[in-house]
Length: 149
Image (cartoon, rainbow, N blue to C red):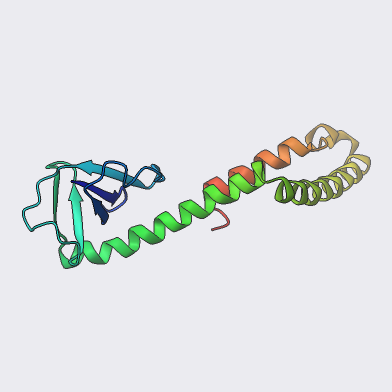
């Protein structure tokens, strides 16, 4: 028997007797265990937890059940980050809109920087123009760093 569980928190999400039952999972968030010990039975009506150290699927305690929600919320935040990064990098329409917005911002920033260079020529080296690639990298760093969660 195979059990699908969340990597964050160990909550068992499903079980199958077919080895192909969980073929298309997001391995960043889920794992599959095969034939673990099941001291409390295999009925999933009661929330179960997978304990990898002992390869056991057992009934979850009330504290573990409470932590499942916290883990799911943390995973939801990570998933939103991954999707935002993916849309910014790969989705053609979103990528075009993002590039246009970033280009506008880069143009405005560079205009302001040129004004600073003119007002303070001795500080010109501290205010070089920014590139679209620098702005893109900064945006992806902000997304992956969780600044805009």
